[in-house]
Image 1 (spheres, rainbow, N blue to C red):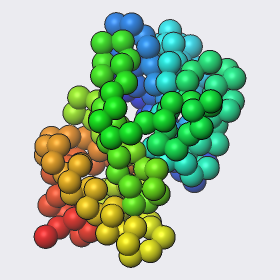
Image 2 (image 1 turned 135 degrees about the vertical axis):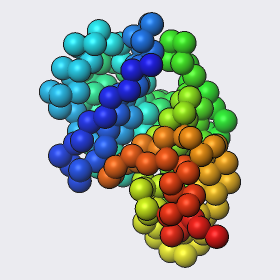
Image 3 (image 1 turned 45 degrees about the horizontal axis):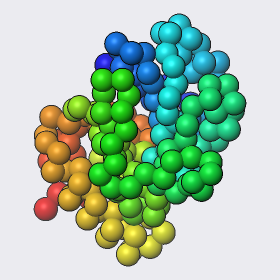
Length: 185
């Protein structure tokens, strides 16, 4: 598997490219902008961008979608989409990427359409979970929904899982279970 992290200039958003090292089929996660760094990496690795995956609909995670689609012809997949413009994803959906299989988990709270993508021991969770924190929410009900979805869907995946958030450094489920003040107890 190929996994590459890009730190974008828009709100210091993390963007990721994942790809099957055999077929070179790739997915771009949360392109808050489309920039030469992304295009150059795809070209240098000989990747075919098949999917643009969105963890949620905030502009700092979606700002580069239109240009990425124009440049690559990839299909957009997210929790909130018009079926004419992309694929709407729901809990338990699987997306194939060559020999890789991406599992979709709904992790609402930060936004109603928040998704996390699981691939092997890697979780791409957007703004749902951060190292030592969780995503901001509109109200206490959304916060409760976020904490419940993190406890029920992400913390149950195993301590060795690497967590790749939408902002800030990567972490693990074990570290977040033990030290994240929002998830302890």
